[in-house]
Length: 360
Image (cartoon, rainbow, N blue to C red; front, top):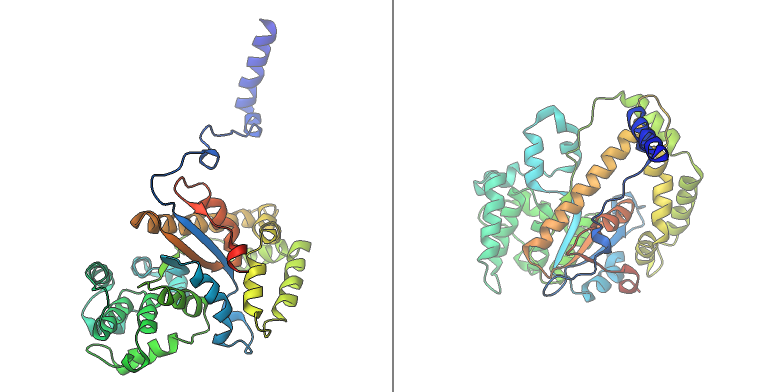
């Protein structure tokens, strides 16, 4: 009895002094360990780690995506997602003024011209796009595709507008009701824009017979105000570590072969490899976690990073819920891939697909 009382007292004392926090709780519910399976065809997700093509040297050409595209098309996706913010979220962020001004300017398409041309605001244009897709014929006409391109631009979804433009015969990519010379020129430029969203995700959707790209990025995180200069310096110190230096050296060697016949494919294979997960963590948000500033700048960064990735994965999960049995390809920056897979693996109706055999 004395021993039991003493043990109980120690536990109570630990709880009062904060010592109990050292005892990490293991949840009873572990969704990744369950063996049950959903009725019907599984939702399958293939996460492809990609470089941001805009950061590649001038020697990059749009044709370099072809070997990668051919392999992804063979996988036969029924949905494609990319690291872009949806038009609806951008619209909500615009309404908050200074709170999201920088993110809107950096990451959001301006739908004003298209919205004026079609007479719809972002919310109404998204609803109209949904209506058009729900009622589209088996083989939409060229005017219908041009109209859908315009509506997607007004909805703040330029990637999906580009899918429609890719699906049009070259002779039909022209001015039409509401589609001005300026908007047509914009869409034409999108076909060769140095971006993984247009050159990989939008082309993949078009070649797979799909009508849109799902925008799943999220930049709505707003933390407490910080000294931006001090924050930047703290993060620079955190990233000055052996893992980050090794990663930079590996990237430099990898990108040196970009001009080879399968150069970009080889880069995506390397950026999608399982070994990258530990290196990505140790070089960036893992290093930030132990950054020792009094203001805990590194931990603030980790909060942003985890929140953003959780919301991105939640957006993918929402897409899968639209049509259970979906085969979805997610084209993401390589640093996001480990988080995508870790978080998706917690979902009870998601099957992760190993990307390595697909990219062989």
